[in-house]
Picture 1 (cartoon, rainbow, N blue to C red):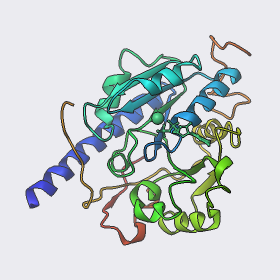
Picture 2: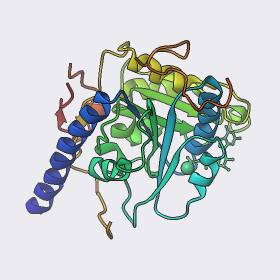
Picture 3: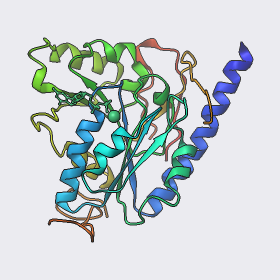
Picture 4: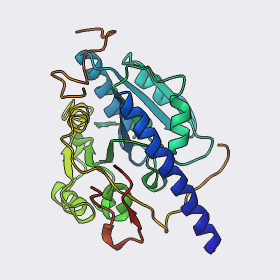
Length: 279
Ligand SMILES: Nc1nc2c(ncn2[C@@H]2O[C@H](COP(=O)(O)OP(=O)(O)O)[C@@H](O)[C@H]2O)c(=O)[nH]1
Ligand SMILES: [Mg+2]
């Protein structure tokens, strides 16, 4: 039993090293990564479709990589925006790892990309423990999932730097209790921003672009701290000058069509080991 835990920690430690290197490499070329985590069907792709279209209209050089166990459906949806998109099939693995991401970016990510969105595998457990070298981690939850999910998945919500509620257009119909959800998020991640969106109505459109720009501007002082949960099961089947949109590092894409170790890891008493590992 002990050996299993040791191996798991070793995998996570190796991932941390890769993530650290990847973040540094990407930063050196002016690219920041936004890592999107949620359960399957929360609306990650729908929200991204909207943000990519908006980014293109703003002339921002963005790209998106989406990971799934099977199908290229999400890449097909995202590619309609006209920005560079890559589908990664994980061959049974329930999350992306930094080394995998780095390998997929080689020979694909356009040099001028300033913002890379990564849609992680739909899962609130495995992806939560893997730093991908991102500069902004976003946890999403749709109004249909239940207000208690932040408490049930404290690593996913506890390490997020932004929590996005999706499908607000149907919030009333499903009796979504916004106050309860916010209170639960605050329990596992005190002070984190919670924003309300709907890809259907367009509520919150541009929010991810704006938050990413703020991070790139250095407005986000607290980079996340990974928590290596020892109670999560990670399956390893198979092979498996950025400013706000007015200007700056997220500057117009030449091909535009128009135009401190701050820890959030002590979530709900979960068996976590917080380790600051970001610069
Ligand atoms: N009502 C409503 N449905 C949505 C919204 N966003 C996504 N959906 C639906 O939710 C389902 C899953 O969305 P998808 O983007 O594939 O979620 P993902 O698995 O997290 O990428 C699809 O049927 C979408 O049409 C929204 O804002 N409002
Ligand atoms: Mg998707």
